[in-house]
Image 1 (cartoon, rainbow, N blue to C red):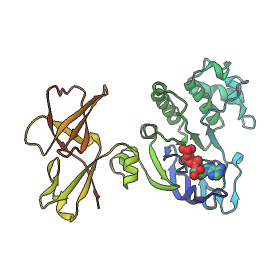
Image 2 (cartoon, rainbow, N blue to C red):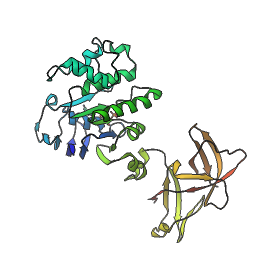
Image 3 (cartoon, rainbow, N blue to C red):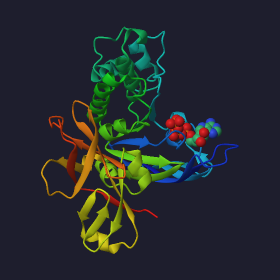
Image 4 (cartoon, rainbow, N blue to C red):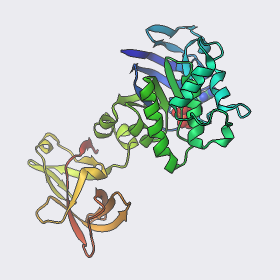
Length: 345
Ligand SMILES: Nc1ncnc2c1ncn2[C@@H]1O[C@H](COP(=O)(O)OP(=O)(O)OP(=O)(O)O)[C@@H](O)[C@H]1O
């Protein structure tokens, strides 16, 4: 069942030349975690603020739990929307204990605020720390307090602005997983903003990508990565290689060799074959389609990146397993098991 719906939402800030959010429409299902991604200035935070009620759109409607909360000039005030917010810097009160921090937003709620705050802190794994102050906690723990404070009043939807950006790389992987599990345990619907594609792909059920205020694609991580709707989306989610190819009856002629492909005959002009490093495979045996001179091997522990050049010096990078040895190997064969065909000229 859909819990949130944005329909043709536009937002232009005063004195701005362009719309920060341009005709954006999407639905969010109950219990879903949605990531909003895009480069700086693409409109992610503005979308979050429009849902929270901290900004009002120029046009469009927003519905939450089956009720229209924004339409034309009418809108439900932010404090009546039952939306939970987690801010980038956590915004915890330094002079309050974590229990008091979580109780803070519960004053007007029904029930026993202390009991609800304790239950929520237990849920986020902080049952030992009720009486500590924020500065006595690690970054990851502070993050969980902020989450507990936002979900304790039982909001209809949880909004998080760059929730992982203050954490170092080591902690980030762990916190991402913890936060995802807590959100899934509560069943709450959540939207988070991030500029980090890894955060989005690993934590969200679906990802929405914005570019210059326009929604480009909203989809499950695998589809966004494997089947992007346009080159912008494809490049946003990681490095792609490019090989210029001339169509022939049976396949593609390239400077790395010939690729048999019946699709080729549908094209008249040269194209670009675009592929990610993991969409190729480096092979030792002869008789494969493509070949290149090995110019660099980079070892990353979990994998290796092999850079191969054609006779003109054009390079492609192929990902391979970490155990493969290239000692004394000057040239290698490779094949592509997946690529996108893009018009080149
Ligand atoms: N209060 C404001 N007044 C005027 N323009 C603003 C305001 N807030 C944002 N903008 C502009 O609106 C556009 C979208 O900004 P927004 O903050 O939503 O993008 P973002 O994708 O969240 O960026 P970032 O990742 O840098 O936070 C940008 O061009 C920005 O400069």
